[in-house]
Image 1: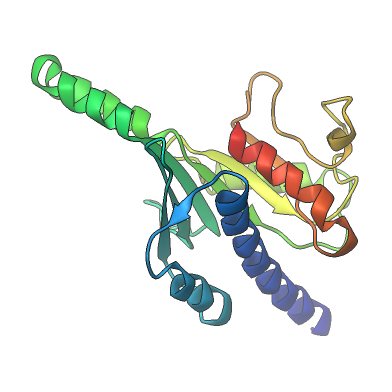
Image 2: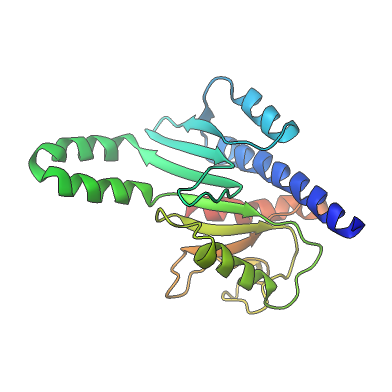
Length: 212
């Protein structure tokens, strides 16, 4: 019906808007420099048919970031984004230990290196029924297995006061759940990321998540 078509259309727009905001925060707040040709990748992702693509970023301190758009997971699922960080120093340390630690160490180190990612899924809603946002997050983690590589899993959504049971007394606690309490320990959660009058205030939610 028309309402269903409207939700599908606005959700696609919201996903693309979130992409632009993620790129902007990496560049403007965390001082990452994108690789050549990044504008073409963003323009294609925003205006074209959704497909797998990657943006590479580097920083002077040796930290790099990879933002995957519509990544294909090993189970065939395709979340909206996966953001991963790496450090040149960590890579050098891993190489230095390979000769003495053997294949088992390499396998463990490779697994640990993969655990630095954040899977981000944008979900546009005009309102959330009580418990619906938590249920959706559980579905992404447990049924769709978005965190299968050890990645953290977070939902981006635009509505204020979406957290029915705040886990923090801070002002953002009514709008974001960073999963800080055991047993999740920041491994899953939801944040508000909104356009319009709320946009500037909610960008701090995204900055906080990336900095964790």
